[in-house]
Structure formats: C-alpha cells, structure tokens
Image (cartoon, rainbow, N blue to C red; front, side, top):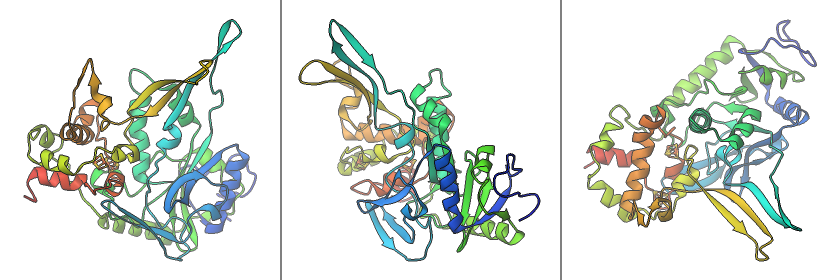
Length: 380
Ligand code: SF4
Ligand code: SF4
C-alpha cells in the first residue's frame, strides 16, 4: 500500500481521477460498499439464455466465464470457462430499463367514499449500474440531452439519474455487431462514470471518476497502477478499436439520408421488415412513449401509466383521422433517417451509439450498417 493510497475507513481518499489496481475478488468489496450505501446493484447476469441486466448481489451472480456470439438476428451464449467477469458484450437490455422504465405508474386514483383519492409511487430507486460499456455511457448521455436538457425535463428520469452510481467496463473484446468506434463512443469509457475498470487475468485496473467512486473503494485492498498495467490497458483498448465486427461511415450522414428519401432500398427493406418494434425496444437511445389510463372492472380504481412505444407501431403515427406513416417503408425510413439523420438537427449528435443491438435482435437480421452502405451504393 502506497502512502498516497490509504486503505480502509479513510474519510477523504485522494483517489479521484487516479488509476488503481485491485485483485478481481476485491470487486465483491465494492459490491458490499454499494450495498451498505443503500444501492440496489443491477448488472449482467444470465436469464432465459441471454445476458440481461437484473438485480445482483454478489460477484458470483455475474456470467463468469461466459461469452456471447452475435450476428444479424443471431444470439447464442458460449461457455468459455476462462474466468472472465466481463467477457461478453451488450445483450438485449440497456440501462434505460431502469432510468426510463418500460412501464411507469404516473398515478393511481380510487373512489374513496364521496371523493377520489390519488396516490403515486413515492420512492425513487437508487441503482448502482455494474458493467456499463462505453457505448452505453454515450446512450445515457443522449437520453440526458433529451430528457434533462431540453425545454421540459422528465422528473422521473431526473430523480433516478441523479441517484445512479455507474461502474463502467472498458470493452477489450468487441462483438460481431459492434461499431462504437465508428460512432466515436467506444470502446474506452472516457467520462460519465464513477468507476471504470479494465479486466486483466487476475486483476482489475480501475479509473476513479468521482468522489463517490473513491468512497466505494475505501474498504478495499488496492494499490496504485503501474506503468505495465497502464500500457497493457492501452494496448488492449487500441486493439479493440480494430476488432469491431462492423463499421459505419458517418462523414456524409445525415445528408446521405435526406438526399435519398426515394431510394429503392426502402422498398426492398420494407419487404423484409416485420414492423415488430424489436429494434426500438432494444435501442438504448429510443425514447418514444405512450400514456394510457387503465381502469379495473369495478370502475373503482384507475391508473395512468407511461409505456414504451415505437415509431414502428402503426398507431404511433395516427393523427387526426389519418396515419402519417401508413406502411412499413415509411416507418422504417422514419426510424433510420431520424436515428442517423434528423437526430443531429434536433439534439446535436447521432441517435446511434453503435451498440449493435438492433442488428442482433432484429428477427430478420436487418443491419443498419448494411442499409446505409446500400443507400450509398457501395454494395449495389
Ligand atoms: S440504432 Fe441500433 S446500433 Fe444504434 S444505438 Fe440503437 S440499437 Fe444500438
Ligand atoms: S427492422 Fe427488424 S427489429 Fe426493427 S421493426 Fe423491422 S423487423 Fe423488427
């Protein structure tokens, strides 16, 4: 232990912005600190033959030694037995499941004698996200821009976001549908985290991103990172940039899309697209919702709920007795040209962070990098 890195119970650790090393088993110490601080830990775990984000309590809940094989419309788990804690990439879930839930109760109303009684969920969950990747930090930043930094703020998102702790993971083995390097969002976690780790065989190199992150290390056995570990992490992450399964040329977007609104490719893709909404449900930046009132059969109770919606839902674009996007061609074109085009005009960045989920989880394997290449004429 170095004088600069006091262990255990120190009130003020001079760690913020520094890089330290812990033994892998010490990750449990961070979990315990998070639990003691009142966080509900959510992170990758295996369920229904996929790696999903759910509540976890200990390091052994992680899919240790498991990896995933991904491709267009293809996802399989693989047991590697290599002891890696984070030897996989992103699955069907994203952190928006917790920050911007698929179903959110806005209020409930009940007949109460002569009047109506209203109530709402008072408690805001306090989550610690374990295993957020660089593309996912970028996705959270995209949602912050939309839900916190515009004219109107979403108070539900705000309270969850403000309480969230983020333990990020640098990607050293990108997947076959990943293209975060093209989008400038990964594979290295540069900002937006409390702690960010790079996994080695027996140790974890951790960058401390905030005072809160430093506090969660206060009881852990750690040491300062050496030049070898810093070089090794740099090398692994530089290599990862060259191992992306996909690439997307972004230099001419969004004009390419605006100039090709009548390209024949839209008709060809519409023949394949099922308008199933999967791509929008798995996308970590999509934010469209519907608000519904749901009454019970007695007529005594009702609830107003906010539900994820999708531009692929025909009802979503039904306005004043007509549908603005009456067919799949119009709906797919809207999704892609918003995500990669008009999102720039609205929010100042691409709506895509290159996570690859929409490619993996599209049941017919539609791949937006291929769609753009076709429209650009590279593959015709
Ligand atoms: S559009 Fe596809 S690749 Fe881009 S962020 Fe959404 S799910 Fe990920
Ligand atoms: S592109 Fe794929 S995932 Fe998206 S709506 Fe069409 S079929 Fe479903």
